[in-house]
Image 1 (tube, rainbow, N blue to C red):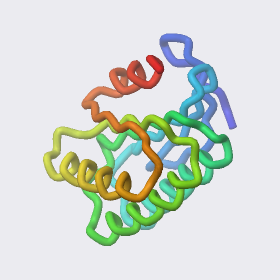
Image 2 (cartoon, one colour):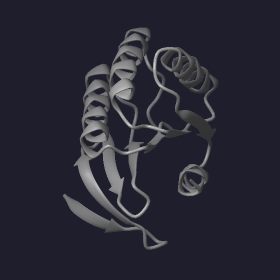
Image 3 (cartoon, rainbow, N blue to C red):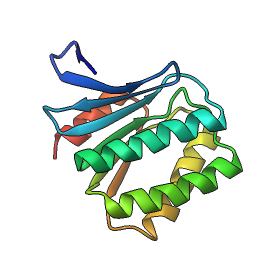
Image 4 (tube, one colour):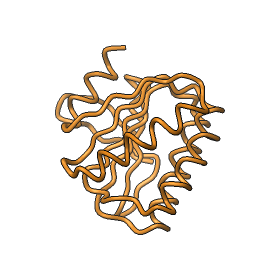
Length: 144
């Protein structure tokens, strides 16, 4: 684990990092940040999501930002898998707010919204907001 100082002096600890995803903990604002760094295959995606869920549960965090801008569009199989693991993980978590940073790709946005509705039907309430700029998502999460 190492600490990265962002330009606005936010202290973030890197909890998991590969060439395709990084998972950071912002202790100052008690939130988890997940950044997909490039388009991923199914194995990489599932590894990143499993690690995100593990950390979210282990740390008991209420705020989560997922930056999907570089990730690409999920396959139908991965969408079904994500819905199932999200329902299980979120039901056990303290999640209250989820900020999703999406690309301008219509299919990615549509997939994100469809999965969000599906998961919310079977989990305790949490609020989701969509953004095109990560800073906007961070500001929304910090405001609570």
